[in-house]
Image 1: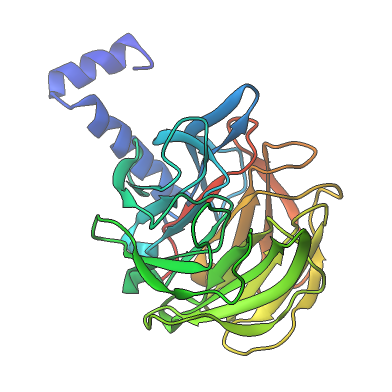
Image 2: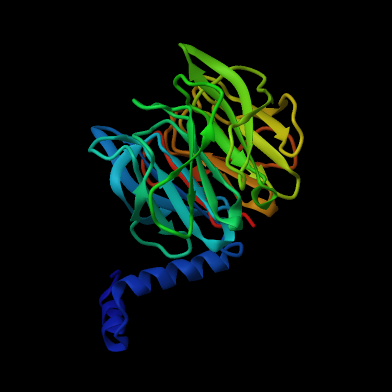
Length: 331
């Protein structure tokens, strides 16, 4: 604990240390914007990978704070969540140790370490993930794998267990996409990738509550891999930010098919790859952080319903590229 007085208070009130940590975290979240908590998990650091999870209050710019640890060191996996039901999911990742197929979970509103959820259908990294929010289905899409990386997986977020086959993507070669959705309206969208030695501009979509193959949606303004995504339920807007060496931000209307439109630019004019992206759902704030850029600590933010350049939000607790991200705020 931080002081002898705090230690004595805990002892006298017989409060477990873990309970005090969760209580303090919950109070801080509630005081700063209704508990819109965003998490960044893992990443590649100097000398290997990390399992550090840190958090921000999405509606209030500032530096991240330590949340806990994932079950393993990893980078370049994917994160998703069931929104206001507050379970965050972390999928796959390039390992410093074994376990590329692992799925873990946290309760976003209660700081602490992640717990094992189950396994993906095969080892996977550089993948995308999204969900239909409180309707409780999580999707893993694309990625680099030794097996059939055209296969799309799904899980029921409130139930632990291994992933199941959802359908197939139209591209069977290496994919490094970003994914977002319009939550309870059931459309998931996946943008970009890297296939056959080329960055692609493909956008595909699925209906999350209906297992099937994905369908062509349109194209990004340019080919890119390892971009970041976020979305707004109220404006039906999905955003694809950066990727490869690009600082371009594109947007689409998720409920309509078609090509993307220019939104603005990322803060960093250099590389903007491998950043975890998430959002505050109905409140229209998107964030991404923890990637290959001038500073791998950097977190950026946009107002999703308004076009324009991104702004600096703050920093992660550590320099780490290839973070996963999720939040508790999508309805």
